[in-house]
Amino acid sequence: MNLSIPQIKIKTHNSAMDTGISGVIKNNRHAGNPSFGFKPIEIKDEGKMLKFVHWLDSNFDSAWQRLVSGITALFTQPFFDLNNKRVDEDTRKTSTARTLGKIIAGTLTGVLIREGCIQAVKKCTQPKNLGEEIKNWKQCLLPKSLKDASNLKITRYRGAFGTYAAIIIMIATNFLIDAPLTTKLANYFNKQFHKNAKKPAEGGK
Picture: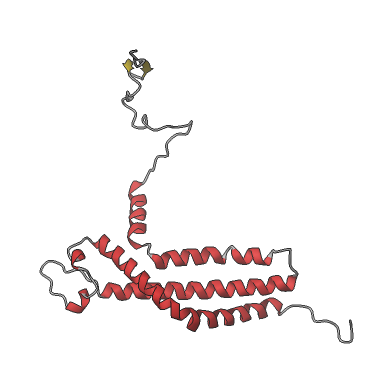
């Protein structure tokens, strides 16, 4: 049995044309995309948008990611603890103080250690420009396959290498820095939250 593909007549602003199912509507660059009733968004200033995207692609490393996640947690988690109606007010304040201390301490150490490791790796992964003499130690962490690579590839390598180094370092700093700093910050916030608490009257029950 022979099957024939039906012909569909589509009208354009110029004239009517007969096409098959796989036909493409001319003079419409969005014709191949389903619209579902929505008009495509036109970016007026593509230069700034593209620059921002390129900046994210090149510079948004693990240190920036940790900073963004820390700020997000700082503006969300304490709010939930402070408004947890399943526990009493004193417990809410204590829990919020502990959460604030943990977030601030973790964000500070996480960002600083990651950024420090990435900058240290950067000093040892300097690309050799044309006609430029460079000391050997400035390329001691740069693989041979990347010595002639683009700046973007080298930047991504620095971010990955620095992040792995930071993770190893933070295994020790979690006990040496994070834990004591978290305790100090939690105690500070706890005192601030309970500073204005009413004291029970003397001799009262």
